[in-house]
Image (tube, rainbow, N blue to C red; front, side):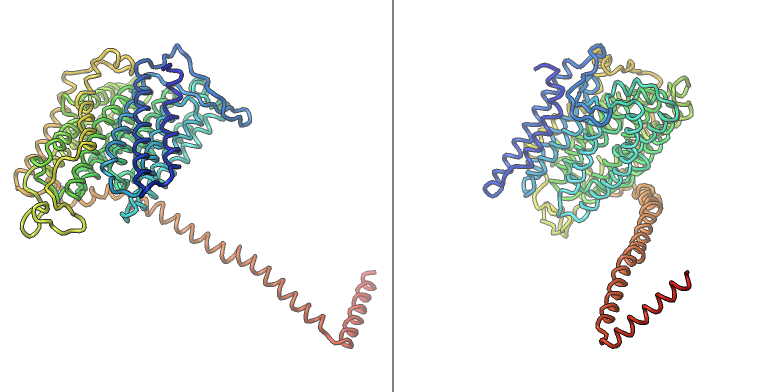
Length: 637
């Protein structure tokens, strides 16, 4: 198939599949509809994966020029076109998105086998995937914005999918509102760029000569949207709560869509960011704070999925930090490796939850002999997350740390002080990440089981607990859930070695791997973090290494209580303003309208009574009025 056809089809296939899935008629007991939904969703993801692989083999080259596409609408002197440009970077990101989406579709068939709303779920996953691919491949800013907004709507639907959980609707609303807050800035930033360039076509926007003030204002507004979608400080608070959604959706959001979209948009607009030191410095500060908040908050969590969620916040900070210090290639490389190992971790977490019936690490333990495939999936994923060589995360983190270290010498667009912030935060987070990754592995898979009833582990005695219902012995998941783990473990372990492949390195414009003194300090911190967690776990058997955090643990578990800060600074004032507006509307606007109606009714009643006067009284009133009018006329004359 020609790449000219594969590029436009890449986002269209999952979008069309999603729309078809939403219109499926009910079948016999909904089983037919479920099978159709599963088949259509899986087939759409598989076709998209084949298209992405085709584009990886023959990506667009700068010499090819940008596709002008098909005209969709003319708004004044602006023409919106359906146009795609899939260069090497876009092709690799699309490959990661489609691979994770296919694994999620296959995994979900078994994971949600008893879900009566599976058919719309599968369709929404396809729409979600197509929207992300539209962001990745589009060369028109308005089309990119459409994909951006469709992702927000799909995330709301998917996070709140399980209506049996009381926290799911609240988490969906929170995710929607927080990301929409950032989207306001994103929309305004795109509007400023388009209005000044008088074009929505990306190559014209990237080459337009903006004034310094206009460009900085637009890029800072876009960063607000990036902070919302990619869960960066201060709009990161929605992501841990989004764990109320089904675990496969957590994998899709964290690994391939939504949070990766903001990073990719900055990557695609990076030629503009290189012209704005203020925007890059802001991005660096945002990234440094996010890296530390995410890593430190992950250390105190008891919920397995929330540990992984906070780790995503931190790892996305690595990507934005790499962009801030002038290395978009390092950011994209870490985005790709993170997609592999984070999808693996979330799907493996789903296997654990599916087997033991709880998210809480305090109710796990001793699972290694029962779930060997899941254990090794976790070991590979957590090793890559921590940056353990030779796993994929080691090589991509090495690129980020090296880029930040070089930027501290100056000479980049961003000031040197901002590079120091990113480098120090990323370096410290290496040790913290190794600590909580080791703690998670030990608490879930080693030691005795902590899910005890009166006579033993829950799966031995059928412990009756509404939060924990696992009467059977834990075991590895069935084949449709197990094979995605095995397949994702391969890139999670080996994708980093692609940095040595000349074709991959050239396509992404990666620097050569640096294996020397620069790696010694991160490796020392990694060993210190992992060793400390292991020592705390061994020192007092049965205790949680996070107990060593002492009084700081509740503070860290609450994410530095930034939710409370947002509640006081944003939610409460907004609620107070809403109450004042309601009161004003009721007592002033409504009162004026109702008062006018009431006054008119009373005046009408008075006149009605006047018309009921007896004839002699009416004649006297008419004469009196005539005399009064005559007197007024005489006085005026």
